[in-house]
Image 1 (cartoon, rainbow, N blue to C red):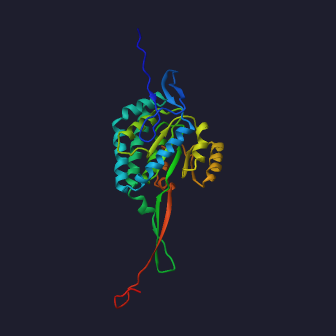
Image 2 (image 1 turned 135 degrees about the vertical axis):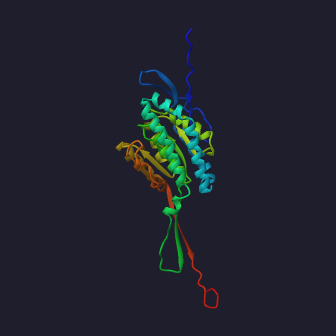
Length: 294
């Protein structure tokens, strides 16, 4: 008798664990030949809410870590991804990429993680400032992480857009909930396995699979989300996200420059996007000729 293949159920990733979707719904994923290759979770609003709770709980610990430690952790993610290149390449091929394009995308994803790892302990120096004021004060402006960021990754690619979005957000000390590509979700869940076996604390990155059409409004109107990042060019989605974000005045960032593989997508300004600028005033103590302060 012919053996019946056991298909892997690609679960979602919340709080460092791999739960099944709360909705109990799944959708079949087929390759270009029509062969069923996976069952993928169809995430619900409740899954998203659970992920936000997890991200908020992890924010304090992650944002307070030393910048060089976040850099070490992002580099460790790159190491783990490099060690599983063959699996990622195979999954991209299953989802329609050519072998050459798949290898290029995985290599670019590893390099992108290393790039943002290098910025973790540098972006504050670049974007901070000592401001001139007309009083006897020092005036410093320093970028600090916003908090929880919801991300809708580009739908055209299975890996690089997700990597670019996640790496730039967590490099700056934020935590995130990301919705993977609906048509190419395999690498997103496998990347969650990489995160789980690296040094990333649970809850820092939460990955959901499912339909943008069902979830994008929740990503934009949740009151405990501080910023929403959308990779896409659907005008209706953009308009709705911008309108719903006003409910708690969350920041909205739209990236429609493509799938994230261009050089323009690899810039430290993506880190700055999800930073708040904190300004501190400090009085200058004047020293007199006799050595006394006045």
